Image 1 (tube, helix red, strand yellow):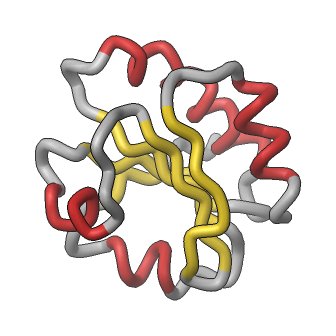
Image 2 (tube, helix red, strand yellow):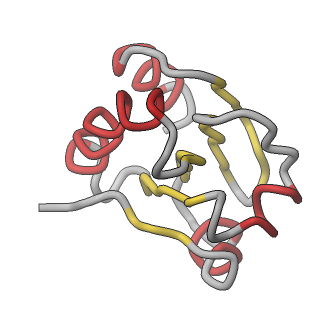
Length: 107
């Protein structure tokens, strides 16, 4: 069973920018209630899209460099990367169906 890949500042470039499949990143923090609300959906998408897209999580408290580089000001923020570029962004806790629709558009 696939789980969301936990990224760090150190693994970001290799896992995201050099990925040959789309990458969805959930920028989150342990203290964030809305982040915890969407966490089960993120994990489900990781299983459902294994091999088609990378579903990742990045803790903004422990990995501030990437969050700053992409201007993450509120969490949860989801960024969708394709070919190393941001192609979509979702801010706030949204239903799984909305996340999935945006993801499907880039697969």
